Image (cartoon, rainbow, N blue to C red; front, side, top):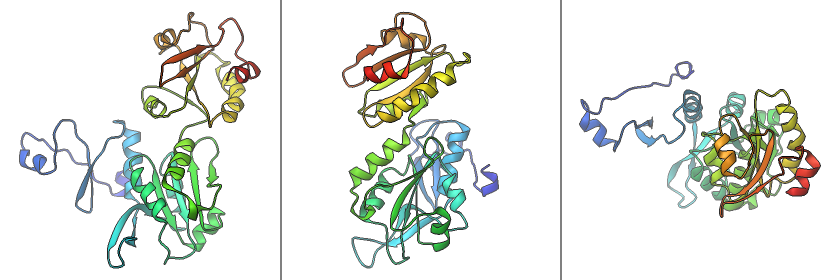
Length: 286
């Protein structure tokens, strides 16, 4: 919990404390702000306890101070956590996806591209850096390297190219792809992640109470993994989102059912509901 990490929660009545709210730029209610070293940032994530806890635990980790890459005298606070052997496990489990840069020396700052990517994606993911030999040994990584830890799918993924040559778009695209599960659930909380992706969206409509639902997911997961660079696969609760199935041209409330949607032009390609949902047939369709 946040109390265990000495993270304070406070509530402000903006009617009684109008000046305070105005000072911090509060323009509507409810507004959540996070304070660190006297500076505030808006919290724009999900308004659920587990999401807020993950976000706050992420920002409770110590950030890294490095000399600016622009001048030799300026010091800046990067949106990157300082990772050591002491807090490595905590860092790895602090969020659903975390990114760790392993460097060989404390005198070496992360590349400008890594720092810029961390700053750009700071509200979505946790970034860290370590030169601690014990932490690097525990992680089993040979520096220099950039590693992503996920709480789903492949737990550890190392950047497959020289990290020193990575560009901001390359790092961002790599991280964003790993952030999307190979075959995850889409719902009101996760839809935005898929909607902002340029890839088509393949829906597997399931009744979660059906004992064969997990089996169907397992059957299609290798297909989803094979085509993950081209299309996002999701499963969706058909009992809750049956109307969405109709909107995607699935004529009957018959589950499981499969349909592909191109979000950019709203084209829909439903799989024949009279046929069983099988890996070979879905692979051929994709």
